[in-house]
Length: 254
Ligand SMILES: O=C1C[C@@](O)(C(=O)O)C[C@@H](O)[C@@H]1O
Image (cartoon, rainbow, N blue to C red; front, side, top):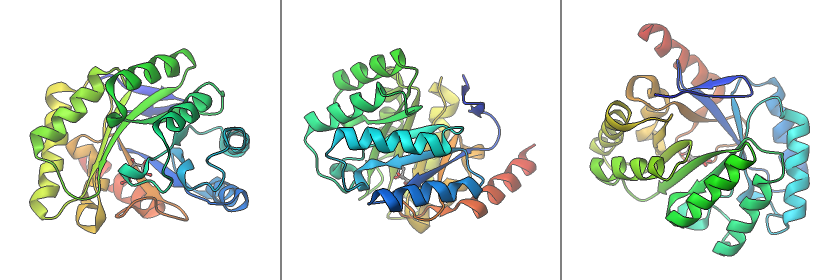
């Protein structure tokens, strides 16, 4: 499996790396969250721009991205415009989704961009090509906030993302039963052991699925989301406790 190194962070080896979301609505709230991260032990910051009150203003979004980079740019920055269909808070047209992502990919302010698989194969391929021209890595994503698809379907979606050329495939699903959590973990291991040529991110959401957010080193997920001030999805653990748990499991595996 190839590992990826971004701003000195090695992804795909050792304990899973921690991504912390920032979800501020106003400029002040957002920059406050980013400042707060200066004293937090984490690996990647995710700006969930769909929470930002000026998300519809591309110039303002670029300005904010430059401010975030100025504060915390020694760590990798992931730009995520989550659509309402997949759990985001701002309903945007596909045209706007594409334009905003393109503007940020070419801005020089981000290291990773999140692109949703279901926006379409051609679009994903186009974004991958553009991102790679600008030294930006692509995390493809898919979310099901209602249920957990069958194991084979989860593996098929992750393989499809990989085949489209993205750098990190990601899937987040909602468990209704403990068996659903086991399906997500089994899919992760199957993907990792049989097909993966890239690092992966998988998680089962909510309290029931929280085990999947700490056990990535065992089952094959290379990054995990933890909350600093505010969570961006159900089941995210506090970043400090998350690091401790990841380190405990890493030591027992070593
Ligand atoms: O895709 C994901 C994963 C996530 O939904 C989670 O369950 O931790 C949180 C989101 O902010 C992120 O973009």
